[in-house]
Length: 111
Length: 113
Image (cartoon, rainbow over all chains, first blue to last red; front, side):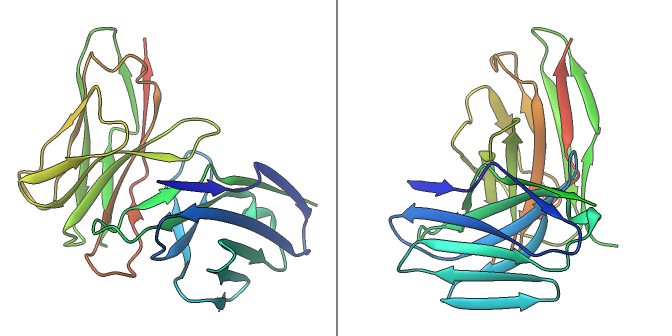
C-alpha cells in the first residue's frame, strides 16, 4: 500500500510564489503525477516525475527526491485562476500502472 | 476533438434504485477507470479495465458494477447495495505506456433523494 501526505489548505497572494509539498511512502516507486482540479470539474494533468530533479513547465515546476519520498509543486506569478485543488498521485511498481491519489491541497489565491 | 464524456452531469437516485453512469472516450485508450471523490478525500478507485471484456475491482468496489463491451465505453452501475452513494464520480482513461497520465471526464454528481 501507499501513504501520501499533502497539506489540506494553503493561501497565497496574487503574483507570489507558492510551494505545495507531497510526501509519500511506497513499497516501490514508479512515478509521481501532479493534477489541478477546479471545484466540480475534471482533474487536469500538470506534471510527471520519475527521476530525481526539477521539471519546469512555464509557471509550474515539479521536483522529486526519490530517496526522501518527497515532491513539491512550485507555482510562480500566481493568478486568481490558480485557486484550485492540487492532487499528488504516486504510482508503485505493480503492473497495473494505477496511481494512488493524495487528498489534495486546496490553494486559495487572494488579491 | 478527442476526449472523455460523462453523462449526466447531475443524477438523483431514490432509495433502493440502481443507476448507471455513462463514460465514453474517443481517445483510443485501452485502459479506463472509475473513481469516487468525497469532500476532503482523495480519489478512490472503484473499478478499472485494461482491455475490452476484462475489468478488475479497485479499493471500494462493493455496491458497484461495471461492463466493458466496447473499447470506447465503460459504464458504472451504482446498485442499491451501495449504502452511501452520494459523491462525485470521475471516469478516466489512459494510453498504455508507462509515463502517460490519466485523462479525466467532467464527472457526474450523484445525490440521493
